[in-house]
Image 1 (cartoon, rainbow, N blue to C red):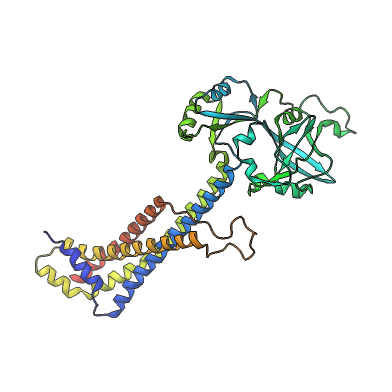
Image 2: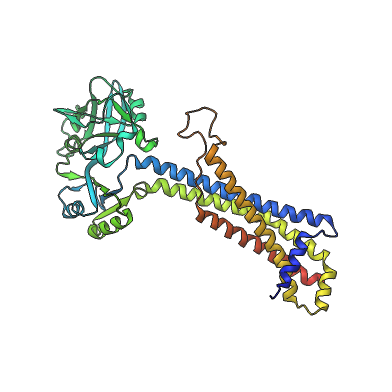
Length: 412
């Protein structure tokens, strides 16, 4: 079996006692610095993944698996041929029509801009809205000649309605037809209608919904916004076992350029894009800290080269060329970075596992102030691989300078 002589010598150098004790200390510091930076990368990226998964879990209670929305404009005819074709797809179990637009809500002297979301009766079966309701009533859109409205929990606080309000919640929307003729009566420029309470509010734990959204029947929304026979989007629930990705691609072929098909993440692209940017920035900042930590490798190898001048001369006398000598110290630097990387990843995974199991790092002192009490953690092994490769690249690059320059100057 052929021995890799440079690796064998580098391993002896790494673990043997040097003539100058400071070299051993700097080598240990180098490995510890790389390990700590690697551990920080694993933990921080896993925390970002945890928040990503947490936010995604909130959205799945409210949002459909797929949405078909017009590429241009706010609404499209409900009987459009593309929408009819989507309804008839074998992968589709259920669809729900939606008309959505902005309006002004007024109750007992308080007012707020709201996002009116008019849905049909299939919405309760298509989404998991009942899982996030609070109150003594039930989710209902209309009964007889009464129209119900279900506000987000923060919207209910803003308007002072609570889960159950008395009387009517007034809704104002701009007139879309005709023109305002009497400037002394600006109320003529608005369509006014009223909603009653079914005795519940919803809480998605996302400001976008809880502060702004008001769910009601699609008939109410169509009358309010003059959108008879129109839809803002078609919400789709797939049959069990159907791949959302495959169904989405088929719908996109049917939709062409007139419609966009959005999965749950694309429905909130801005939110997840911001989270991804924050994760990338955190990775870059911590990688810079890793580079600083790897400067210790330069110092360690530089001192080692000086310490082993006689050994290098002996190797040259035995026939070793410059490439062989350089490989000895390159292996030394690579082992320092590799050992630090493995130790940092193992320690990072251990701390992530402990956080998942026990949640010992809390988000605040007051219980119930946050959606979760402890920082969420989710380990993605693709991130672990990226961290490992990053550490090796930075560490090996740090080893290159002293080996390529200082060794030649000191052994001649």
